Amino acid sequence: MLAGFPEGGMAHRGWQGISIGVVAVFVLSGCGDNAPPQPTAAQAGDVLKSHIDQTLKNALAVDIKTTDPGGKDIPCGSGKYKRTYAAEARAKVGSGDPEIITVALVGALSHVADYDLVDSSGRLTEEEAVSAKYHTRVNLSSPAKGKMVARGETECLPLS
Image: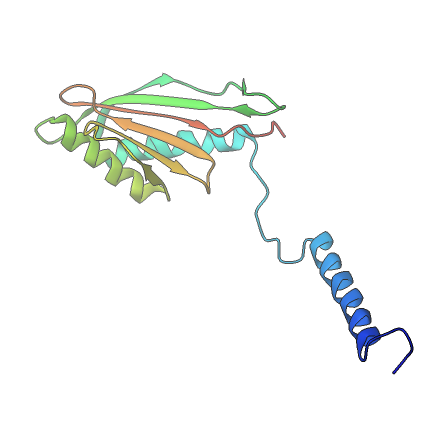
């Protein structure tokens, strides 16, 4: 036993120092960080447009009209921007009941991409869905008999 050190104390401190050093190397090197790079506002905007258009088509919409063409970078602070897109249509089949149309839109979106519904607070003719994977938010609704509306926006993202 060495003077001034408890038995095994020196060895313990040596391994502790090495362990901290190894952990630091892995953290700083990003080892195990498989997160994909964040998309740009334009890339997420293109995905949003595609998801909305496909959702309306899958819900058997007719007379689809773009009501917000998007394509504009909207500043949202901290050097980040978001994009929007919206379209509306008429329901091709069914009774035109707004609640049923909204359910059809939600089902159609679920076949297009991975989205999670946000609490609708009892609104049966409007649902909101978000996708962390695509950095998008989509609002699906049927404000009147036979009418479908889908609008969305991206998260605040970098330009490049």
